[in-house]
Length: 368
Image (tube, rainbow, N blue to C red):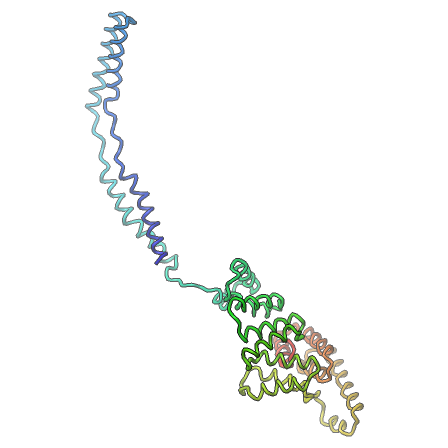
C-alpha cells in the first residue's frame, strides 16, 4: 500500500507540473504602445518650448510630424485582429495531463514492474541461488550483506554451513558463533560449531570442540552429531572402549533407516577391530595356525602388496577403500590419510569413480 501511495504522489506532482503553466493567463497585449510614445514626445515639445529650448516654428513642425505618426499608429492598432484564444488548447492539455499521465504510467509499470512481488529473505536467496552465479560469488554477496547488517541472525544461520562445506572452517566458526548470538542457543548450533572447530583443527576434536559437543548434549542428550564426535574424541584419546560404548548406544536407539548408521557402524568397527583387511579363504585358514607376530607380518605384507598394485593401477576404487580400511584397522592413521590422497589423485579425471571413492571414505569416517 505504501508503494502505491508513493506512486500516487509522484503522479500528482507530474500532473501539477503540467497544469501550472496552463492555468496562468497570457500576458495582455500592450495595445497602443507606439501611441503612448508619441504622446510623450508631444508633451516633451511643449516643455522645451516653455523652457525656450526650441523656437515656435521648429516646435510646430515637430508637432505636425509627431501628430501624423500618432494617427498612423492609432489606425494600425484598430486594424490589428484580437489575439486568438488558446482556451480550447489549454483544456485539451489539461485533460491529457489528468487522464493520460496516470493511464500511461500504469500501462508501463504493470508489465515491466512487479507490484505483487513479496519479500525475498536472505535465507530464500541462499536456498534457491541463481544457477548462473558461482557459489563463491553468492557467498561473497551474503558476506557483504552481513558486514552491513551483522545482527541478521538468519543470514549467519544460512552462511555458516555453506562456509563449512567450502572448507572455510575458521570463517564457519565465526558464523556459527554469530548465529548462536543472534538466533539463540540450541543443541544443533552447538554441535555444528563443534564440528567446525574440529574441521579447523584438521579433524581433531580439540578441547574447545569437545566443550561445544558437551554443551549440546547438556541441552539435548539425543543430539546425534554431538554424541558421534564425543565418541570420536574418546577414540582419538585412545579410549576405544568408551568410544565403542557411545556408538553402540547410538545404534541401539537409532531407527533402521537412519542415514548416519553406516558412518557410526564403520567407526564402531574401527575401535572394535572387527573390520580386518579382506583376505582370501585359503590365507585365512593358513593364518589360523600362526602366532600373533606371524599373522601381523602376513597382514602387513598383503597390505603392502595391495598398495603396490594400486600405485600401478589406480582405477580400482574398492581396492583403495580396502587399503584405507586396512591402515585404519592397523591403527596407522597417517598412512590411511596418505592412501586417501593417492586414491583421489588416481581417479581425479573420472567423476563417477571420484564420487564413489568420496562416498566410501565418508563411510569410513574420513572426509568425503
